[in-house]
Length: 186
Image (cartoon, rainbow, N blue to C red; front, top):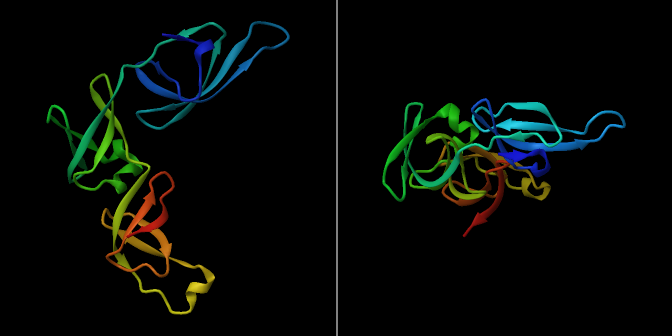
């Protein structure tokens, strides 16, 4: 249990058995009546954002969350399979549970899997990953002065905008938060 005095951005609370992360909070003390805390919460399970108001001093439950380092093994249909690096147990998650993070998954990659009450609910991929360009149109000579870009397909199937000079087979570093090209890896 945590009280409203302990609310912080990033704090995790549980409402009706579902885990939420606090995106923003505001302590309000009106001239008349008791103080309260207005919050904006994002569901760790679905990604939905809700607004909740709590009286000052009210206590809320904390969720039973656990992060495990797991290795991504393979995908079969809409299911993605992971192996715990310590116990070698395997578990699976659906494409819906992974959301946009699935386009960054590469076989044998180690990622963090978030568990709520021993059920996997989401993954956290590394901020920067290195992937090979498998398909890119050739750049037109003379277009490089403008600093143009072109779409390139990576080995995981993700499509990112890259500079015109990049060719197929090159390895690039990508920011997984924004999906942007960062640099070429030598």
